[in-house]
Amino acid sequence: MKSIIYTPVGVCSKFMELEADENQIITNAKVIGGCNGNLKGICSLIIGMDIDTAAKKMCGIHCGSKPTSCPDQMSTALRKLQALYSKNDDKQ
Image (cartoon, rainbow, N blue to C red; front, side):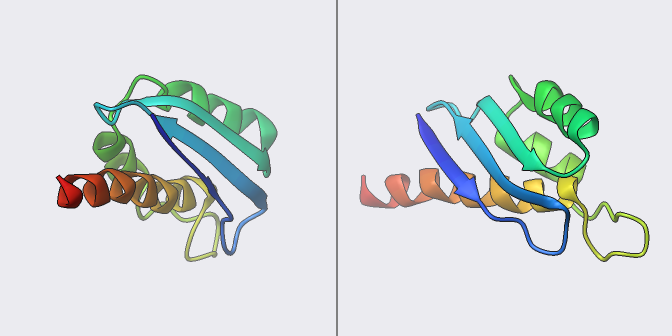
């Protein structure tokens, strides 16, 4: 089990907590700040999804005229979480 706390940039949310199991399946997701209902919905939807699929679905989404969004920032956080597994693979 790996987890990450990520501070998003350029959006209303304050931080994101993400956790995935050894198969890179998301087991927990929580966002503090931002559009509460929407982000709870997104977190609920990605639990049980593999990191790569979830990150691909959310990458590049914009919020109004902003060049990013909470889902886009979550994609970045998921890639950082995924990288933790790659580091372990390099050591084996």
